[in-house]
Length: 296
Image 1 (cartoon, one colour):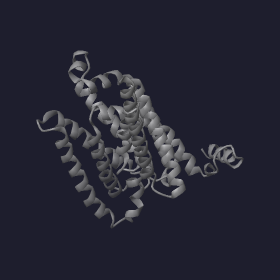
Image 2 (spheres, helix red, strand yellow):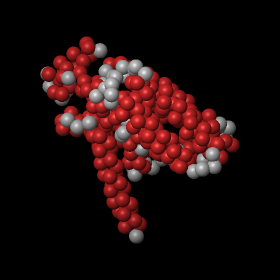
Image 3 (cartoon, one colour):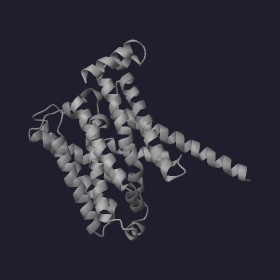
Image 4 (tube, one colour):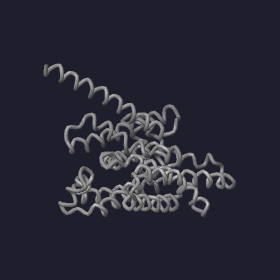
């Protein structure tokens, strides 16, 4: 990887790339953007269609608790993935199981898990503060390009490939089950399997994204791109493509903002995504008004 970073740095020094690419951490950050955009953007429209926005927020809170558990068990500070993934997976399976076997509304049940994860996480962070400086875990909470390592990048690539394969194989069934579970069941889809599968896919994607986006903000990048894309899309295919495009523009824009203004990467990415949403919302409203006036 050092050879690659040296080659990119030479291109930046010669003017072929922006000067900031002389720094390896920025190159790693941009590579993360290229991977996260299709990963989270591609899942975004399914998250919104399946009404799992609050589910994603609960997973973000569970990740904080998982970080605390991993560090207290002795995991390295820069890669507490075991604790994160383990606790998030347990939370995911618990939420899906209770949701399928309870008569209470799904948002109420997810709210219970959300509160449990947040309360437990806060208590564990207090215990963690006795061993570590709390500022050392800020990169997991808010996202930071400075802490992304080559190992994080390789893990992100590996998870992105696994997620892409799983979603590609089950995409039609997932989409049909999202739009109409009864019709999907008649068509031969296994609703329970698809719900557990997508929840696990979403968990994997969120956990590996935390170093860049942050636990407090990662759910925004699996919701806002789809919301913005919905203002532009005219079909399921364009909805999917626009979600990825918005995620890429938001990630790249947030990367530029965070490096220039020295603000947390996750916050900058979410602000960029939100700005794109309001621009597309205004553009969609103007287009509808123009069409109505033309129709008259």
